Amino acid sequence: MAFYRIANINIELDLMEKSIVLPSLQKYQIDKNEPDLKVKVNIIKNITEPKGKFINRTKYYDVYQYEDLIVQYQRREKDLPYFGYIEYGSNNAQIYILENKLGEMQLDEYLLTQYVFPYYMMKIKHAIWMHGSSIAYNGCGYLFSAPSGVGKSTHTRLWREYVNCEMINDDKNIIVFEGNELKLYGNPWSGKHHLDNNISAPLKAIVFLYQAKENVIRKISAKEALMKIMLQIIQPFDNSAINNWSKMLDELLKVPCFELGCNISKEAVDVVKNKLEELNDEN
Image (cartoon, rainbow, N blue to C red; front, side):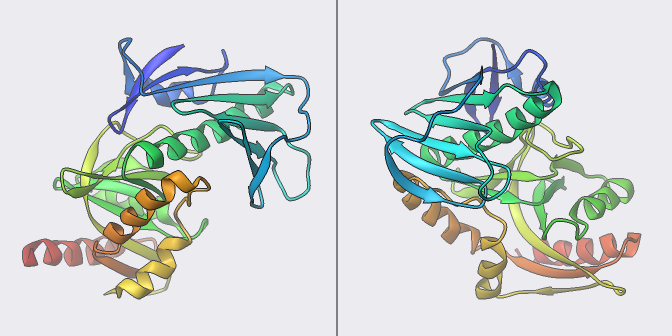
């Protein structure tokens, strides 16, 4: 086991010996400390039928309440057998993964651990998780979001190529209400390219991308932003986290949001950068 600090949360993690999460975690490692959260991964040979009160069902998991535990049973697609489950306690989580080929178990561990941290962040803090690619530029955090395959990572790669900026996270973004402002925090669950840094920056704008031949950007209303944000955030399944999550959503809607039609070019970066600098001048 080892100790890590992510978004000001101390975590004790006991992962598989050959874990694909661990290399990304190294930059967040700290000396042994009193953990806010303990997480342990266990390899098992079979999964029994769920017990307790049924709470929720999505395409990829079922959630049950059993005594003092919330239990999330995970599958890859609808109606396929479960490959693992998570027991959520008050400040600890036990992850159980079916014994299989090493590569499959490594991917299962990565997936299930990235469920655990949002769950506790939403309970412990005013926090929200949003799919996208985020950078820090001139001391400010900017989040680029869109459905998978549109080109978020490509766009932030262009920023890093042409502008003096730093990657925060390339997939799952932690947004925390802290010090009377929203802040983006790096974390190790950062997509297939593992692009993240142990940094934070105040969230100053959200940019929703779509592919276009010409580069054009416009500011969108809070109503338009809400529709787009809801498609990209992790929503809680535990009633104890809903109030915090709702307050965070209200704060998120105060952030300036833009829609960007873009191609793969330096001009796409310039169009956004000029708009964001105008925004900062106004403030």
